[in-house]
Image (cartoon, rainbow, N blue to C red; front, side, top):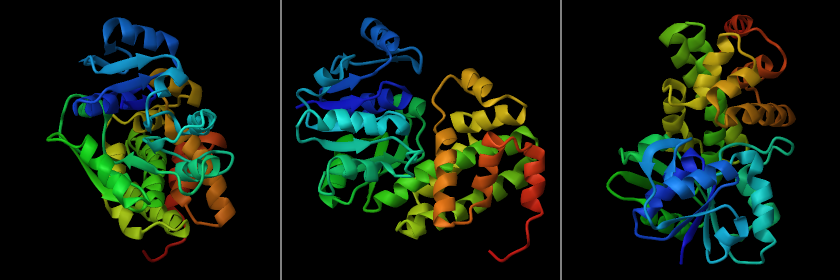
Length: 328
């Protein structure tokens, strides 16, 4: 039975390549018709993963229902704001799917995490999991050693997924804390924008590590309030993903922050990067959620004010540094 990967961007294609190494048929679906046509013709995702070719056991689809027809296991790798739409379409097929996702972020209007959306559309007994952690798609596709976390409330399901995607270059650890892993994946993108802004202003290494460390405290504060295990944020899906995304220029969120610091508008920066920047929508959703829950998140709130309220980045730094002194 094939596994279906929904989303033919960089991460979806990289995960399809990894799963194909396990000698399974992988159905890869994407909504961008031009990209899919090129994939079928060249077996190369030139837009996202150039010079890496897809093996024969990856079958490419442009039609969603066809990609799902013979599959029970579905890995979703679309931007988080498209997740609900995909799950609703899957639900309409009246099939029993085992679902996992690589999408990171909150739903903007509701503040829901991916597993909350999945439970709302299916039910709490739906077999579901998230794969997350410090992993750039290009390095996974190049078979460079990578470690990630797969989290599910269903321990047997997370172990099954880990064993079916792991090999000598890709190692998956398991977790029961799906909430914590999802929050780590969402907040780290926001903080990576902040790290990019800091470095774009040439504030140096001290500033970057302060932002990472105090940003981690904000991540933990929100996560624990939502029922996550505090220790999750010290692992791969927390501190690991946070440090990677804040310090490497392979990070599109960090590059977006660098562009904002140089005076680019959001539209100009997005056009320059030409990939989905999930930290933008995550910032708006986090701001709404933290206000609703009355969780103090000064760094993330400041990034929200830079992006959406016209706050000058240099003035933002001064405001953060002049806050009332407090204990850690």
